[in-house]
Image 1: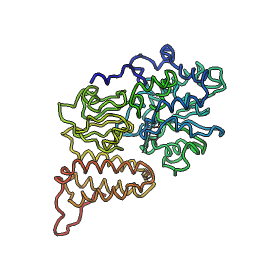
Image 2: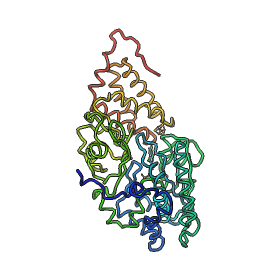
Image 3: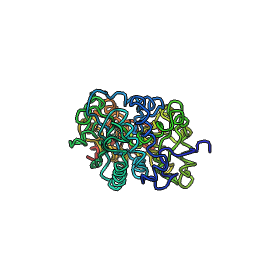
Length: 431
Ligand SMILES: Cc1cc2nc3c(=O)[nH]c(=O)nc-3n(C[C@H](O)[C@H](O)[C@H](O)COP(=O)(O)O)c2cc1C
Ligand code: SF4
């Protein structure tokens, strides 16, 4: 097991170097060396090539290759923008906040490298209203970076200039979806846009825009400073690097853990997370918060990389591992997920707006003891009608959780319901 232990923190340097949020401490720990190297020695296209070669994939959930995303940005159009997704809206995810709060300069350096690579002079960091204190730390670090010449006009004496602005939203799951985020940032209602056009072509203010997650960009300085080979020392061939997992639920030591990608789930639970509370058995894991298929407890030897998690029928996603033990009622747990989706559905399209409404009604009916066998079948009918018909991924995220909950825990549903009343008594729904 000990071979999975990281030899150093890449994203969580503050855990090795106290007070690294202060720029003098950060600089004394080789801070801003990646940016310095890029500006002094590399063309923007070379930065993109390095990020591509390193195999960095987006840490916001979809795992899209970052260098490829940057290469979609047209060079000859100006202005263009960087938008950093710090909404952290997935239930169980709390990693980006730790980065922004404790290691803000590494994050700022990552934003600056991205801006240098694609030729942007303005970046926005979008966070949620609850992140007020986090954004105070971040703003303080941004001010320090301006004072030392790592932001602002003619950075390190070059032609490259960059301003970073912080924006707090009101706190909505849908505003983590990149096009709804752009609407919110522009001052409109946080609802998703049609795609195409994709943000790389027409994003913020209809200009080419890179949208990346906080953790994604925070991984870039290491790649540029230490090189592709050093980065690929971590992780697997197809999923290189490290990833932060936000571990919560029925474990003794919940928290954020930076793992070597490819580490088995068992190591996370037993070694890092200190085992399951009271020595109970793992029943199931939601490895990407509410959005994921359930990973059943007998699959905890699965490696935490994009491919292995997909092969196990789930996903690595944003890495928000919510652990359920054998004492947790599976129907109750899925109802919690559905309550969340019903609350967060933006209402723009009917499959999601209506589907989450009816799912919530039926789950309430079942958990309150009024459900019938037909109701359980109706859950499948509803998700079948939602699948592939929702306007944006939020509605699609509802489907795998319900489907896998029914697949693995059908007996718990069946034991909660009764036969349909023979006399045709009215069905009691919670509308
Ligand atoms: C409903 C919904 C919520 C999302 N929430 C977040 C979020 O909180 N943070 C995030 O980085 N990405 C979130 N995403 C993914 C973003 O749309 C986008 O793919 C991501 O920010 C791209 O950055 P990356 O390539 O660096 O991962 C969400 C997507 C959906 C559909
Ligand atoms: S699927 Fe439809 S209703 Fe649901 S969040 Fe997306 S656009 Fe809104």
